[in-house]
Length: 248
Image 1 (cartoon, helix red, strand yellow):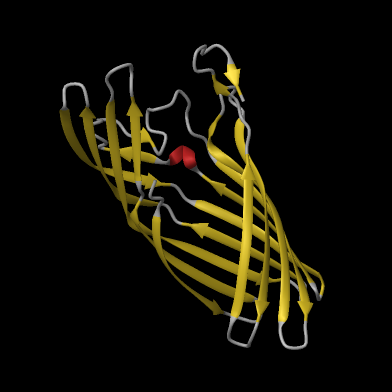
Image 2 (spheres, rainbow, N blue to C red; image 1 turned 180 degrees about the horizontal axis):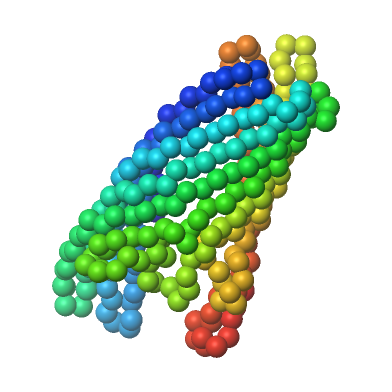
């Protein structure tokens, strides 16, 4: 319920007329909390897990100008091993039992790479295509509440399936509309993102969606942007009352 807090610093450089380089330093310092509540008949218990992930990684980018209208881009997110602090507060309402536990674990987040293509078929139109892959099968957590073996992260041992490498495809376009005193932009995009886990039939879970946006250069130093994104996914899960059946 608190999301993930990331503080990032970015810089970019023109190495030559045809080659540009960018670097981003990301600092992770919070990953929210999860609350479980169960109320069987007249009694119930509540378990609150508070997680905190602390570490940093780099994003390295390279842009190559092939022609005046065609560019290629490469992006690489380095892997990292960070400190994962958790606290579990367990309360049973019937007997008023409170049990607090904490853990200092180590989380290994895998690398991710992206390859992209940027086209400018007309002076007033931009097109982009991106392919992204993250090696989630290599993500682990160690020393989690006394566990002697490394567990997959973030799935851990809570589910009956193993996490898998994920891929994403993204397509975007931008239209430039010049006005006498400012330049206006219309944007649209479509994406297909795979999740790090399969569904009950071992098929890859996919989220599909679109994004639309507008922007304007209202002066040589000020640019205003606004965007909207919507995503939707359907997959098969095991039935709650009958594990032999699946629901969508």
